[in-house]
Length: 249
Figure (cartoon, rainbow, N blue to C red):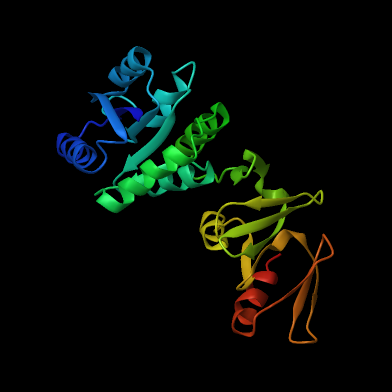
């Protein structure tokens, strides 16, 4: 049973989420309190010491990220809720924090609760700092990405990622120093997160950092040699887009 707080300033959204929790997750969630502002949320967290917080991103007096920055000890899990904020969602994905997009459905909610039960990862201070920084600098892409591995979260500089290789529902991320990380996300999700950061999916199973290409070879259908020595084929139907992008590097 997860002791839970709801911090949401929209009355309708709060009522709907409370209803879904009581109807479909009463055996998993003990809803302790509902706060409607960031300041109320800070006080409720101090009073109740929850295991899990459903946290609206846009609160009346501050953002969720600003609220978390003001909490000295963030020792609970967070599921952010948001209606549409593209930059906030991007920041959340870069920081590997769970979120639900409004309107929240039963299946999505239960999946989030299941993740909280099975992977009880407390939000880290570095995640909070990264979230707040990216939210405040909407035009600046983050320098680091949080990657979820079997050992927990690791933070890596995006420019140091050489390539990503699909391994079914996982992705092998190869770093410039030779380190290989097995990340518990399918490559499609990483591709979406890294969009606009100089990455290109040259093949169904490979996403490469264009800044780490050592050579492009036109023979044998076309392939790239990466700085780690790996050779990666360029799919025929992606070659024109690849060459157009390659010409800019």
